Image (cartoon, rainbow, N blue to C red; front, side, top):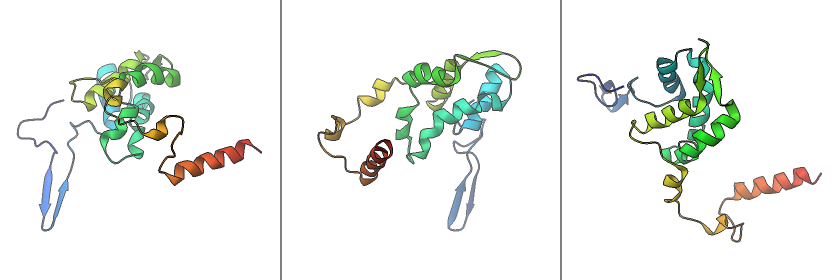
Length: 159
């Protein structure tokens, strides 16, 4: 899925006075639909056969506006442990072919890392700075919303 000759990294760029719009190339991995089309090319079937898996893998994008949220789902632990628990070990695509869901997840992750590697959870976590509140809430978290969520949950289960 490389770039075509004379194709720029970000696809077509249209420039207007005071405004520049960048249109992503369809060759870039970016969203669940593009990943689903890649899965169709590899294993057949229809994009709908793969879309739910790719949507789940990309769902943390809703929590952060940068790639740091990938640490939740773009790793071997998620591919091998969580994906099969949700989707089973295989799906049968619309062509009747059985496809391993771990392979689907691993391809997605590899594509997002330009087919260079598939990180482990440890690859991410070794760069996380442990905060005092990680340790069984010995210290408070600096997030009133998190505290409110816990308060509402405790009220709900004590009824």
